[in-house]
Amino acid sequence: MHEFDDAVLQCFLDNQGQLFPEEDVASNLEEAEAFLEESLAVVVNSIDEVWNYFEEAGVDVDGARGDEILEADEVFDIGDGRYLIVEG
Image (cartoon, rainbow, N blue to C red; front, side, top):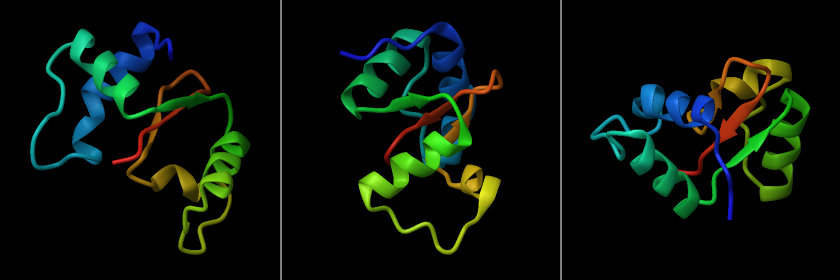
């Protein structure tokens, strides 16, 4: 079971439209936590860990380099050096 702190949950709640533009998947912190747990979302501590995640998952990154990976819809910048990765 994953544990997501309030900063992670609030980041997802505020920015979920970047991955789900049609409709919000959560309307409060509890729903955000349930969704992230169900979708097996992960929190990583650096851009390098974001790259490692995508490499291990075999995700095509369309030639992105450096911090361009952060432009992926699945990557949410929590704002404290950590990143939330949610597969849509």
